[in-house]
Length: 164
Image (cartoon, rainbow, N blue to C red; front, side, top):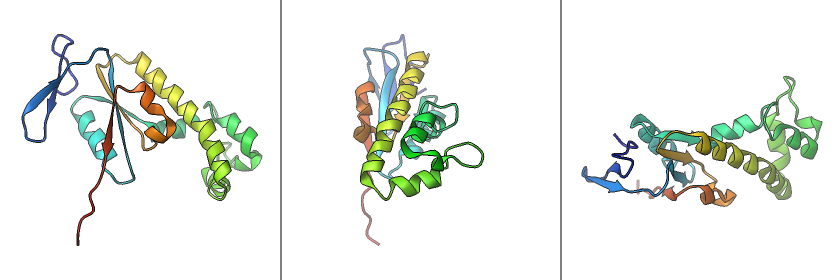
């Protein structure tokens, strides 16, 4: 099974050609960063690996969690962008926040400076507490956010243009 080690030494990988090759990590868990543009196949690959028994971490979902009232970014966002971003239910109104940051690059930069470290800290904590031997961290902004520093290798998904 993908992600299970034999004597904690090698990970069998199913290659495109149907043959198996192996990887010998020097630490556990071995962490693969999965990134790429929109609709590049990140979620498909992540779901495939999860079906094979690999622990997966979805940074988009973690991003939503850090915005929650009990999340680490919540008060920082309110302090930075004002109470206008608080929705009727007390959560961050992402639409209102989007109206602010998508119209001003400096505000988008500030949003990322607040949220990206919160996501990184949550992912690092998940990795540190994991008993898995292999973890895949899916993040569209992995390289832009500098998160490649806490993964062992980065897989970049790309899509070729097709002629119609």
